[in-house]
Image 1 (spheres, rainbow, N blue to C red):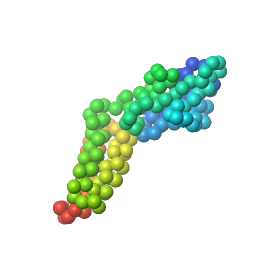
Image 2 (tube, rainbow, N blue to C red):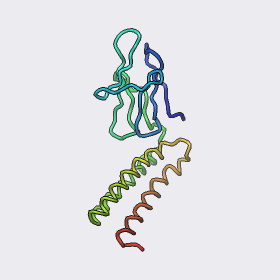
Image 3 (tube, one colour):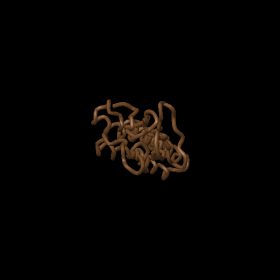
Length: 156
């Protein structure tokens, strides 16, 4: 699967593409040039009539929907199995390290955020076997929990 997907926008001046569909953030390109978003709207010029309004909607980074004039044209992360989507949230369990104190809580929070965003990229990788996409976020969470517990003096 390619990281750049072409959008079919009727009457658009040039080729319209969405770059970064396998990552966390996406960019809209017109003829290879990034379009700046204004108030969450990427404006794509058309040959005749009003400009096309391209929006990226959704709360979960990397799993939004790309909409053109209110119509969904691309679902980011649609190829990801449900089990992988669920295990992607496993690193957020590290937030419970806050109960071990402010220092370990901070380490837990930072590790949780870094591993969560890394998990998004792992589960969206189509070149990786599905079993590995499901297992890797869990293994990373377990390894980070062991690191926190070693710092806490519970282990080691």
